[in-house]
Image (cartoon, rainbow, N blue to C red; front, top):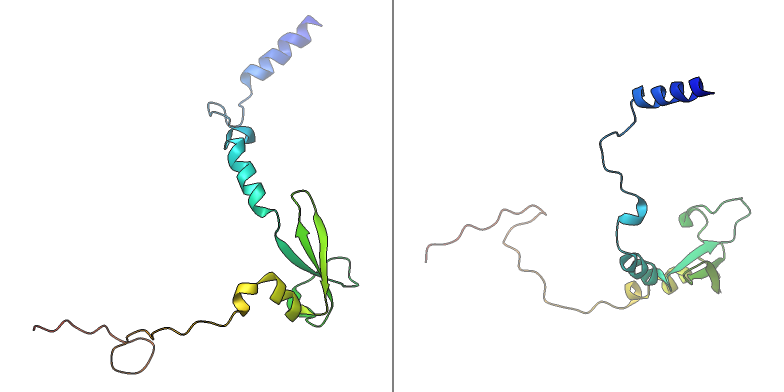
Length: 127
């Protein structure tokens, strides 16, 4: 038995180790737990739309826009049912309410004379 232990010690000593000489950083040392908890708390209340499909996995929303959808809410541990909607348009109204508000009219940007998207900036005048 003594020869096996000497042999194993020699193999350990002579075997090059991957990452030898580099400090190892575990996942626990990456950031403070409070930063992780803040990120986790920020996600609570997020909504997502999940189509009712017959396939085994959900597909892109655009593939079947008229399919009914379940709106789910993240509670910090799992997605829970929030509401049901008849189609993609209704789901988007719930998920993105700010994009369906009428835009406020404001002053138009000042553009130089000419046409086209790529206008040259006007040279300063010597007044």
